Image (cartoon, rainbow, N blue to C red; front, side, top):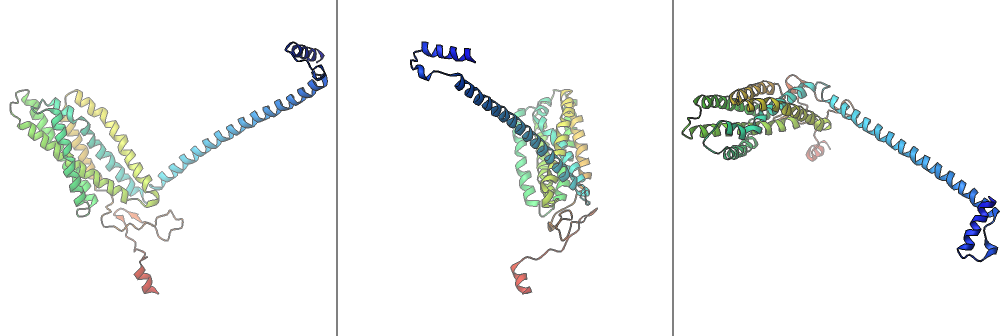
Length: 318
């Protein structure tokens, strides 16, 4: 300690410090070291506290994530309980079937190219895409008149017929080889592709409306999300099969398979619950604070007498 004081004072004098009465003493150095030790201990405790706080925050975040996952799983479970599985499962398969049939749309340009039609493939793809416009207009105009369920069935059925005729036409074109001199095949293929697009649009708009109205508000987003996710899984999986047929130039087989999937969609759509002109009595609350509950049976939603909240009824009661 004495040597440290002497060295410090020597450096101070050499640096021009001339006030010898205020040079460092052993007592001052001892007090400084005691204070520095206390500051160091406080700093160490601070670092430990910060580390503990970070660990606790990470644990809280992990607990929050697991809690959210568990809440989501619980919400998903609700759409399969209380008889709601009779609504959810048919809708899941309907979404899967419709997405499988829609997967053909990814390959239209390639299909047109492989058929060696006279008309440019990209021009045909453009006109085929325009077919969605009348499909959407028809679905919007008929959604309440014909009904959601019936339009879904029509969408599947019309798409299946269009794909079957397309499969036969593609087979005829391949049989004829490259000796196709007229543009009649281009017109036929484009017309059938447009009909396919129209019925596909009708099916999609109808099933979106049907799935939204099939679940009570409390689980509506969960129910529709599960159905859409089921369709997405089927949609990206089928592309491996469609891609194989395109690479092998087996377009007729690919379209026939898509037509068969559409037929399966018709069967599944017949099992869905029709919500056309059904009052959405949203009292289903899993037994918590609900006066009445939905009763899902094999024939759909049993209607519940609506509770009157109108001003006229209240006035009449008074």
